[in-house]
Every structure is written in C-alpha cells, then in structure tokens.
Amino acid sequence: MGEKVVAGQFDLSDRQLYRDKLRSCLTGLERLLDQKRFDRPKNLMGVEIELNLAGGDGMPKMLNAQVLERIASRDFQTELAMFNLEVNIAPHHLGGRVFDRLAEELRTSLAYADRKAGEVDAGIVMIGILPTLDRDDLISSNLSDVDRYALLNEQIVAARGEDFVLDIDGVERLTCTSKSIAPEAACTSVQLHLQVTPGRFADVWNAAQAVAAAQIAVGANSPFLFGRELWRESRPPLFLQSTDTRPPELQAQGVRPRIWFGERWISSAYDLFEENLRYFPALLPICDEEDPLEVLDAGGVPKLAELVLHNGTVYRWNRPVYGIADGVPHLRVENRVLPAGPTITDVIANAAFYYGVVRALAEESRPVWTRLPFEAAEANFDAACKHGIEARLEWPRRGRYGGTAQIDAVTLVRDELLPLAEAGLAAWGIERADRDLYLGVIDERCRRRANGATWQAATFHRALEAGLPRDAALAATTRTYRRLMHLGDPVHTWPVAMPEPVPTG
Image 1 (cartoon, rainbow, N blue to C red):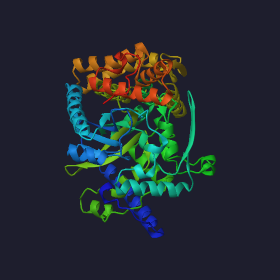
Image 2 (image 1 turned 180 degrees about the vertical axis):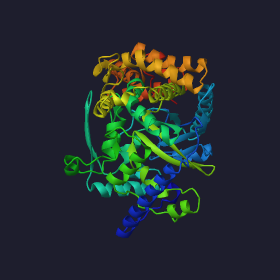
Image 3 (image 1 turned 90 degrees about the vertical axis):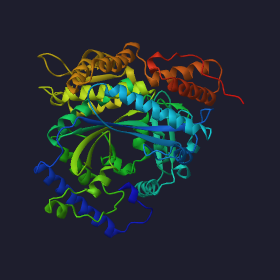
Image 4 (image 1 turned 45 degrees about the vertical axis):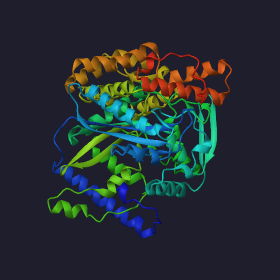
C-alpha cells in the first residue's frame, strides 16, 4: 500500500468509505481465523535496522537519495528523513547457527553501504538517536522526498491542529516545539519479526510485552537529543510527543495515543486489530479496489489492504502484522522496542535474547502475564527507558508466596531471564556456540552495567571534563562511536576515553 500513497486531499466520503472497508477487512480477518487458513509453523524470523548518515565531523548528512542510488540494492530503503536509511534482511529459519549467519550478512551489507556512502562524504552510523542532531536538522524540508511521508506529515499535523510539544525531563530537561513530525526521524530502531500461528500469537505478544522493559534496560542507546542528556532510551517519549495527534484537551480526556504500549493482555491477534479500528481514526484513508469478503467467498486470500495500512499508522511497541507469502496468509509479532546499534554483535545479541526469552515465557505453565498486572509491565517499560541498565522493575516473585516485588533489572536478567533465553534458544534448535556467544554479550553488559547509553554518556562527560564545549563534545563522542561501531567489538568492551579530535584535511 505504501507504494500507492500519493499526496492529495481527502474528503468526507473517503473517510466513510475507508471505515466501511476497514470493517469488511476485520470481518475477513475473523473469517480467516475461524477457517484456520493461516500458515503452519515455520519458525521464521526477520530483522530490519534503521540507520543514520553522518559525515566525518559527526554531523548528520541529508543525502539518503544519493546514497541509495549508489547502493542500488532492494535491501536498502528510504526512511522518514533525508539522513535515514533502512536495511531489511530476508527472513531466516530459527535454528542452527542462524545468528552467526545473520551477523555476517549484516556486516557485509553495512560495510558495502558505508563504502557507497563514503562516495558522497558520508558514513553509516547505527545508533538510537544521533547525538549531533539539531532542531534545524529536523524540519519538514528535510523529510525524504517520498509522497507517503509528506502525506503522513500533513495528516498528523492536521489531526493535531497545533505545534507539537517536546517536553522530556531526564538528566537534563528538553522543551521545544515543532511544526512537523520531523523530530520523529531522530528515532532509529531495530525491528524483530517472528512469524507465529494464530493459536500462539497471544502468548507470544503477551510475553513480548512483559519482557519489553528488560530489552530496553540492557539495550538502551539513545541518551541525547538536541544537545541535552535525557532518558537512557529517549526514543519512546520522543516518538510519542513528536507524532501525538492529541491536543492537550484530548490528552486530559484520556484519549489513547497512537504510539502505544497498550492497556491489557490479549487472548487473540484479533483483539489488537479490532482495537485499532475502535480507538484510532484513519490517518491515510486510501482504499484498495479489492472487496475482501468477495475474495474470501471465491476461496481466495484477501490482502486486507486497508487493515494493513491502518495498522501501520498505530505505533505499538509490539505490533501485530498480517501478511501473505506464496499465497498463504500469516501473522507476525513485530517487536519495535530496541534502538539501533551499537554494533552488529550487539544487535544480534539483543535479538537472540528476545527470541529466546519470548519463546520460554510463552510456553511457561504459569505465564508471567497471569501474575504481573499489565499496568506494572507498562510502568516497567517507562522505568527502563528513563534509567536504562540501572532500572528497577516489578516482577512476579518466585516460589509459593506469589505477588510481585521490585528487582534490579540486571539481577532479573542474569538470574531469571537469561536462563529462560538459553532454554528458549535451545528449543528453537539454536546451536550452543551461538547461544553462548550472544547471550554472553547480554550477561557481560549486566555484569559491567554497561550498554550503549552508558558509554555515550560517560564519553561525553569525559570530553566536557577535558574542556570541550558541549557541541564539540557531542560531535567527538559521535565520531568515536562511529569508529568503534565499525570495528565491531561489543559495546561493553569499549574504552571510555577522551573522544577523537575533529578530523583535519
């Protein structure tokens, strides 16, 4: 559907027709579920990574069109702003040495992209938020020259009806306004896909929601925005505020934001798609010619195009995905929690931890979501974003006493979640060498209480102590980060030292 999005105005009949088509799509999804038409288990996973372009000075480069032209690969695509790219890795079967294979594919792809970017004096930086971004970089004129981004910006701005307000109170406080959704482009993430059967979907989604805070705690990598040190993972509040269609009055009424953790555990994938229709008005009311119910009546598989498009404008941290492959429909859980970077090894370690722990939690006889209030899972997510690896989380007590208790994130991960991840990866058939290597990275981060966010903050402060002005310290931190990222050793091994000076010549 994204390829069909063209800039233009919508009238009242467009929105009513789109709502009717959405209802038909939802009925079609319900019929597909009832008829058990979905693909059998294939243990398929996929990875997407959003990237930044920066120059040798560490500053953003608005050159994605030129870089993509040189890369000339369908694996690489535009993202929201001109300093963004996205790389998509083809689906893989979970098993064997899949994580090592993924790591090698990503290293090859990113090295090639970085060489091509170098032809226009730019380079690839894989990070949650580029520390050198300035407010002047994140304006509507720097959005990628793609109709769907212009239209999305236009519709979100119209729905809000006033400037967007950014107000994030962390180590320091940032307050500013924006006339467009461009600040959202600062958020660059990793998306992990897992194809699941309808019968397993709810358990996997619930497990992913429960573990989202732990993912953020060990993987935080976004401590800076517009020169301010904010939350250890500042993407979630930035994403929420920079695309919030609700003016203050609707926020006060409790209207749900489109960037949403959710509000309950679910019993079916249908629950999430139905909520999307019930709670969120259309942003892009573009109708496909297909009648999904006629296609079903004829024995075919409907695209459910309107449902898919609408689902793509509700930004859940764990999103349901409907797709068709080889003429057969399937469902995926898209995990959108993690920031990009710092290195390929770190990205793959985060993925291994997620796929392992989600499988183990989804198969527990007393699932965690039956013992942890949903509100606690959401509060855990916020705490992990604010405090990163130093967060304290609420988690069910072990043993016969029941209830929940506060626990350090690193203790929770090392004592409970890593053993679960080990068991989950073994159940997927992942070989011990991969399990030991990548889960070992997570364990070392916890042992040293170190991740991308702690390294960035410590390096920045070291530069300030050495007498660099704030902007120069952020640029020097970014340049050092980029060099170490391409060297590839996991972030917990990175030295905290005086960042690199500005390159000359």
